[in-house]
Image (cartoon, rainbow, N blue to C red):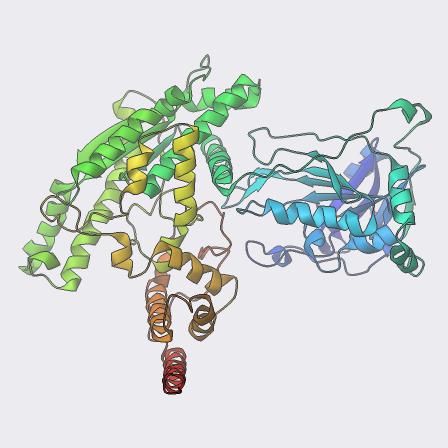
Length: 618
């Protein structure tokens, strides 16, 4: 809760019992990196182990019959134990409050967290909690938000109860339930006996400064508890990354759909891996909705009925629900192959979407015709003798026409079928393509939301493989083995002549490596070159590494401006180039990187001379 104390705004936990406030605990470490800007709104409480009187607003005084309450860094002393609070980010800091609180005799730590989902993050979260209680003993209760924040983040629950290094209760990581209550029955004497055996901890505890204690006339235990069965430790069950993708973005899509009050989604389905993965996410969402309704979730049932505009409707079959909620559209041109058309149609049939097929050539020719009419010039593809500028412009006009057509059908396709409402347009550009800028500005990558925009091509392929086997969707087999292609250049003898990796000049696997080094390792061109010399020493010469790094940074900086208009995407990857809140960087660079590239070239020459000298030694 935001609380104004002496004209300073703090982010606080308000702890109450039986209609009386016990303590207002302001947050001491604010998240101020990556996706978070807490310091923009709040000030951290910097007075460790100190409290002040907080005068309650009159409306609260009338409810609690209190005039003032403690405000600050304190713990609660009940009749049988001592309880302390951490808030979200404080668990992740190098000097977490639970360390000193535990040394001062706090036996139960509670944490109300707002920790968003990132692929493979659950391991870090579980390790932090279990390690906190392994070193210091104690019981740790972690509660975490669930659902979409109305932006790019999804909070994935994952609540847990741990004691003395073991987990005793695991909450669901992804679900459509708004609230989940997690319980465990534990023995406080197990904490005390565990701590008594750690000599080094006890030596530290004898020197720790005490926390202010708020006395609470309440007990968590009673004499009748003697025969209560205790909870047993459980082994944490982790989702694979493919399972995480099938659940997290699907829940995020559901939150967006029900809260935006739209009637469904429209997805341009190209027959490639990316749009197929997006279609599978909507299908996974429909599976989760049907499962939630089957389990008796009345809120989800009410939302579904509102979305489909049928007060008595009860979803039972995911394919049938998908046909009501998802419209897919294959937008062919003269450069499209029959294979991609067939793949899109087959997948649409298997997931049950309402599928449309259309040809955009008349619109493309009309737009190019306007240019020719005004200038007297007719641009040509490179294969027909045109320049690289003509070739790129003719590709881009196709891509942009598809975006215009997608929004037209999103607004009017339900109207044409006699149904109410409009559709949210889904984008399907992956994180690697966005990083390099391998997309047309204002093409089908421009949409209302993009559920795969924070996921790498490698993870998406694993996810599609998972869907093919688990749902099952055999149409995905041919999509997986087909080379990724934009199909914007003319076919050669009826076959695709253009592939993504050939266009980019690098593989998707290499792009993931570049992305992590750029964002996580904070490397520029020279720093990346130095790291890749070691990483790729068995497969590339120094000159080859240099060429790859320079090609990446040239294209990355040339296309960085595209990130300013990137469709809001589900945040799932730590190297996302999202310019809105996560990756705040310039979008105008010197694309020649003269000083950095000179340093790379100089180093390559030195390494080559050294190798020549070594080769000359017998």
